[in-house]
Amino acid sequence: MNVQSFTPTPSPPTATLGLALFATRWLQAPLYFGLVAVQGVYVYKFFYELWKLIVTCVDGRATETYVMLAVLKLVDVVMIANLLIMVIVGGYETFVSRIGLQGHRDQPEWLSHVNPNVLKVKLATAIVGISSVHLLQMFVDVHGTARHALMWGTVIHMAFIVSAAILAYMSGPMAARADQILNEIQHHRETHGRAEEHPPPVFAPPVVSVPPTVSVPPVVIPAQATGGPRVAEPGVEARISEAGFPARMLLEHFDADHPRAFDRETVARLGKLDFVGPGRNVVFAGPPGTGKTHLAVGLGVRACEAGHRVLFATAAEWAVRLATAQAGGRLAEELAGLDERALLIVDEVGYVPFDADTTRLFFQLVAHRYGRGSLIVTGDCPPSRWDEVFSGPAAAAMVDRLAHHAEIVRLEGDSYRMRWATSERAG
Image 1 (cartoon, rainbow, N blue to C red):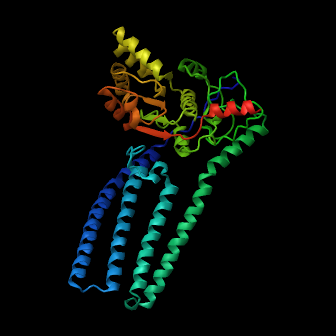
Image 2: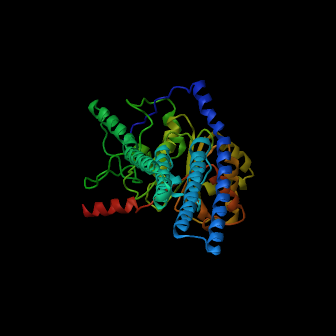
Image 3: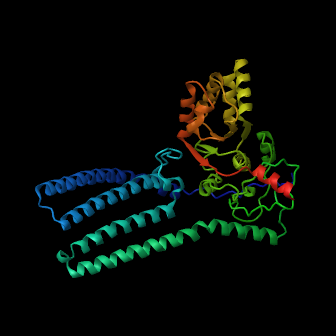
């Protein structure tokens, strides 16, 4: 496989002032406790207004206008409460800490791809909804509302709509900025004689080349380097070789148009290797052939280029390695020796079921790595369904420790290998 080795351009050290400013995000924590208290106030207000409406209707003093205004007031309270919970959950997720809701059954759909643009648009549309209810209340009680209040209420409502439309329009170009930068980098390399041949398809053996009938879509996952060629660093090849990768697969060569759905922004963020230092984990879950191993190996190669030691093996190979160490009475030494590796990759979880004894070995591996180093796990099912793979009482504890500080990326789609084989036969 004719792929050159690259290392990322080292980024300048973070300034002390920058670290101090970033640490001030914790000053927002008391604000979120205040929002929780306000949420309780609105819950009280909702039941108070509901009780007033019921009593008035039972006494026969409720008019049609009163009922409409009371119902709109209840809707207004509910919408404001929803806005508060969006600010509490989304703001805490984005600015204060990571609360690990990925893959949870109660995870809001917008939280799976939360970013500043999405959060702004969500908040803007929520404010438009609340403003609509207020404006409707004015027109229902038009005889009791001053003319200037109606005029300014309409103007403010239209301003909210325009601002929400502008934010929604801007979010698209801002999200596509990474692709534009990548295209500029590729064009720069081509004009300087660094154009490369098309890489082989995902998971293809290194000796197989892409047939002419298969087109490889443009790369959409940005490279870690921001420009110019990456210069080989001594030791990179040794770290990649000792990692035991099945093939050299780069994030830049991932066919991001093949999966029907996956979180591109999360994968791009993982490519910065921010999860390796704090010892967080990554789980790629999806059907066979959707690119899980490619992404795992791509992150592993990038970690080797960044100076980290990595070790790759399938789940079955890890099971044999741990069982052999335990049989020889050196499991503790084996786990301690793995501390030298900043990143371990466990591939193909779910294809072979494990008994209770093997599950206990995996639990000891995950528990020993907890807080010490990072794990990347790929499998055909998310951790919530690993009870189908691992048996015994240690399974739940293992999943809990693994998923506590983990990014869970789901990939959906058909097998790349099947598509490539079908295209080859058609050619």
